[in-house]
Image (cartoon, rainbow, N blue to C red):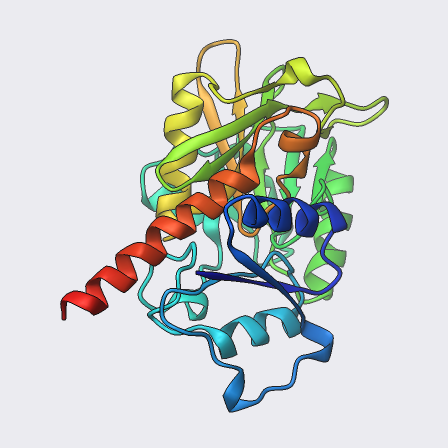
Length: 287
């Protein structure tokens, strides 16, 4: 198997960890710079090769789609591979019966409608959530109706369609990293001063390969709902015992769990793609 990694502004730790995981398994690693890629018909991948795109740019997505075919080992579970995309994942998770915070799509600045939406999610404070961002960007806490009205006016004027979500206070924020059908690493995010959002910390004790069972179960189901076999899932664990699925990210930044927590996530990723590669080549040989 050859491992092809499509990069474009990808964090250096991601590339380095994947390269090391490949080298330790005698897998040939190839880093493809999306900004320099020539869309040449001779650039195709062979059956059983692995393809992963940790970059999130549109250029990288086009390269991945160009290189992909159904005999390449990837983290996609859908037959359409990188051509399948799910928009509005809170509604998908809700449809799948997963425990998300109460969430309502906002498509109009109508004041009465916004007041009703606030009541429906449990009152203020509430969260205005913009999809497609990372690192806490796009997650806004609103504590008053004037703050909500002005934020929604601006967001809708920018052509974006946010969700209004219940604010879950006093909960532990878990990031669970799923590979295949198991959680290989998880960590508790920590609060920063003067912020309601949480971020990965530097304490190795916050990292584990065995998160609470309900957290692990929901994380796996979230990735499966997106028709994927890899992802970073954000979940709140409330003192009451309830858990709330916030989002599932693919690709996701996994280096914290490895460099701080000492958990070999990159190795688990490469091993999973090796298994898929073997299944592909065995199927071809048997046909």
